[in-house]
Length: 491
Ligand SMILES: [Zn+2]
Image (tube, rainbow, N blue to C red):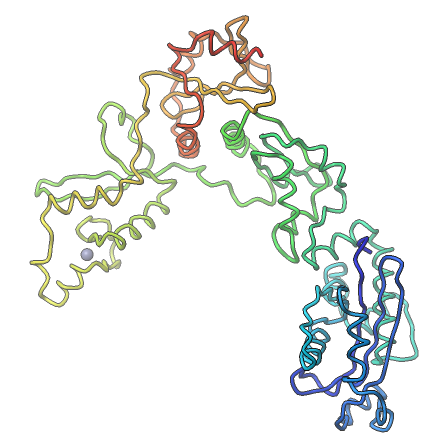
């Protein structure tokens, strides 16, 4: 079980359910793992009378405990078995709590990694109606004359672990145990060699289920690291754990860099529907916030969907947001932060209230003098939105953005007016752009320019992605794209 770890299967019988006030009256331990297989048990004098229902449950009477070692007598021995081992117990919080409380009285800080066999049974066998130790024993055909005695329960746990490992197979068993212990584990059908085979290059990857169904589609700066992170983050009942349970295969495509990965990912997410992925964001239309000056001179905000078609010509200033809901939330936050009046900005719908200082004062009938002039107000609004203003396309023509993964793979992204018209390999010899898949006709630069004359919808995710790489990749206007650049690609 999980290679080099040592496991201490533990069961305690106690005089009650409260670790703070009740006492341990029997302890049993079986330590397994590596070459070790040791056991130890003892009755322990709780120095108090055992409630009669507990005597009935366990068969441990007051007279059996009289003269037995006290916890102070056995704690040294018990510690030697438990120290450094993973604590395994059925409903482990109970046993861990008693051990922690009792060891604390002797200055020992007991905080082991804990494997709860009750949780493990529920995870591995969710359809079993009961997961108590007796129910499990009946289910797996493990019979014992004794119940609710410490070593008998330890034996039952051991029998369950052996049964589950044989029944589910080593890979599934280790995976689920690893999840419960928060240890980094690989999905049952993925081997370390599969992970090692994934390159540490940028690209996109697909996690597939047993029937080849697409579970997750992602982009990464390092494919191997990113794929592994899905499994390293998997614990207990997390979404990552649900994903890891179903992953059967990993597919990937190496790309020239992070921008390329982002562009390919967003294209792929539009066509493919991964089953275990939150709905890809920004698939709808972005939302613009326009700054409209009324005849009165007052600045007001208007929300509209999509980018105005002629924005390049008019040079109009607009705030740009992923979607309408996001825009509304940010407007509220910015108004609060910069003390802007939402009523004055005319963005309140019926029933909504403005919480600005001026509105609070007018409500008390004394605020008008505190209201800023229209010009002052307008300046403050624009300053508040500065970080969200749409940046006009900074070139007069299309560009090719050169991206290189540093390992001999490079791409040219054809981009115009923040729209992505394709990613290509530059063939310097022929002076042509070749599509990555090789499916389309090669393009010379004139043909590339013609492609960019086609209308294409503005996509917020492309805009954001391109803006993020605006200053750390080589952007070449088509008219300046020369063989000197091209030469780099033939290397
Ligand atoms: Zn207000």
